[in-house]
Image 1 (cartoon, rainbow, N blue to C red):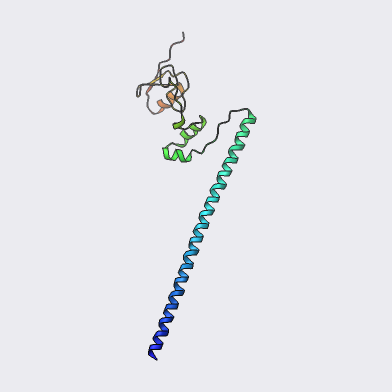
Image 2: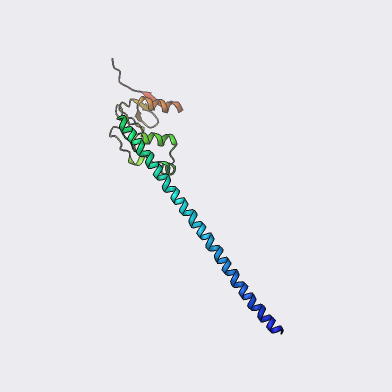
Length: 161
């Protein structure tokens, strides 16, 4: 009688173990499915946001064309700017000139007296302000920006008598 009782309890323990393992397997499967659903929802949200940005850029371009102004593509500089350590103001200035630093074409007279301004985002002609710190020339506006921090630039424009 005692042996039958033990056998019954062993069979019962095996059955309980099977039930517990099955419940654990179901729980893991549900967690996995929930995780996959969350990932899919995140992907769909990214796609939705990208489409919204593209539509916004399209409308902006059309507005510029209607006004007869040049169209500069709006780019998403956030990834590049963050990785390159650019400030928001620098990214705005680069967007205005429609290039990122790795795309910028330097003028041959950049930083030379009477040539183009040495600043990457400017490069306007008429660089007569000499920076003694790096021995380069800047336009008046950029020289004034540099001189706000430290008086490095001096005007060496030719006299127009």
